[in-house]
Image (cartoon, rainbow, N blue to C red):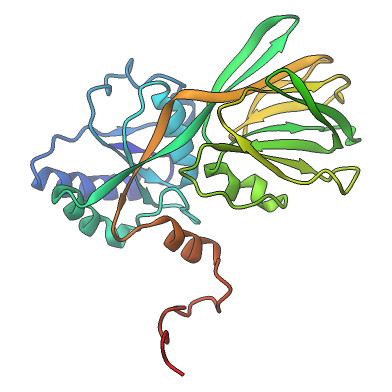
Length: 291
């Protein structure tokens, strides 16, 4: 059981409860309560958790992202219990945990794979930085807050040049995060694709684009600002230097979430994002078939 940062007493109590539910079904449970800085990328096996069959995350979506990085190339199915606010990835509420565990024990669940990506920063012909991500790679102009030029190459061929405050390259999971707030589309999270969303582009013809995850994408920033940076899943990867090449491509492992019958993709969209065109708090199917 992987427990995210927060109020230790409250999390301890919830961890004890969830551990008891799992133990009642005959499962061995190991807990991990750790501060943010202890969740090093790819430390899952080194920390002794590699044989696990299931990882239960207590926290919010940030805890899910940290867990994906922590597991690295040793991904294990994840059940997210929401102790945060939105809970788009960690979408099992505390009230539903007991029912979710019962569904798991009865085999009434599905494993849904999600795209992970590798982001590399090539500097002077050498890979200077490499990181695994789940949500997005963001190129941000930064101080002095003037637009920058970002060239997008697809499999080595120039596709377009953005002049903007930045560019977000999001996975389908990340399409409902920073990219969505910047005007990008919602992409079903189990698809294999990347979403390219420019931030405040100079021309209206620079619109969000969706392309296949089978390709290799390179972003070249010839003249970054002093504060320009490459950010992966909300964490600074590196400040940018002139001529840096940021390479984004599909990673070999997939991040997997456990879903029960009570929790599906479109239900999550409706409940978490208020998506569907109805009045918030009103069941859109309540009066179906009535005149």
